[in-house]
Length: 356
Image 1 (spheres, rainbow, N blue to C red):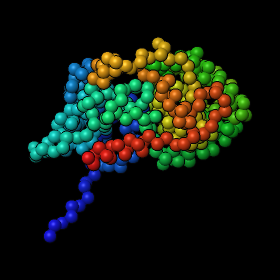
Image 2: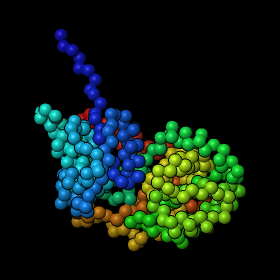
Image 3: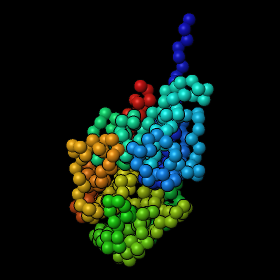
Image 4: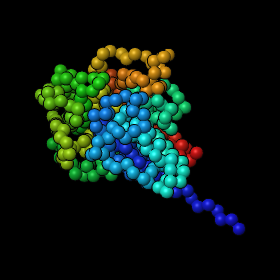
């Protein structure tokens, strides 16, 4: 008599966290959606991180002593994001081909988010966005928007904690979340002041008020320019690290609609997840339109030899095409046409990868 095999154990997942809040948020959202046993490893890097990934190969030599330990038992799946994590993820897979007793086992699967600046063939799945302009491959999944998903329980708790604190402000409440300088955009004081005036005009047109927050990348000069340009009823929050009084989650819960800046991939998706209207404040990017990814340049990107300039125009065009956001100034806002389903698509691909 044969005994039917029991259910397969859930895969063991390692999530390699970096220094980017956006990438870390997407990694956490994906890990939570998968629902498998997960361990988080915080990576801290040394000076070797500046070397090209093609030269580094599979290594943990870029890690400083402040990083979390990377020791067996090895995972079945590694989730990571961005250039700095790619050599470390590949090193883990190289070590994971044997268990603690030395017996062979299936090496860890690598799922990488955003871009790796390494040969794409080294990864089982690369989940990317239109802005990164990676070449089409069987192991590359381009999604419309960032995978950020704010924990509903955290949003509900923030709503309870902040309930009544905005009641003196007239409705509708328009949340304005400002980004900052990046490789693609410069959020200077003039741009910040234009945002403040445009948001104030929106509030005045509806008899409402603004719930404004800066973010880690907003410079002090831009913060002050934004604050001084607002002439509507307003709650203004200047971002501070590890601040328990940060109202961002309360804004997500309580605001009637949102204005976010074009430099962020995460902010519009977190706002869209509320089901409320989202408008994007745009301004010209640095350096003009990026170079098309074609021919030999496409092959160089595929091999990790070059990193194409990020194309936020393509990213936000994809969001607009799906009816998720509108441009600030392009008419009255409307709720997202349908909720984003990118996270569900990625979960399905990862589950299929692990069950193969």
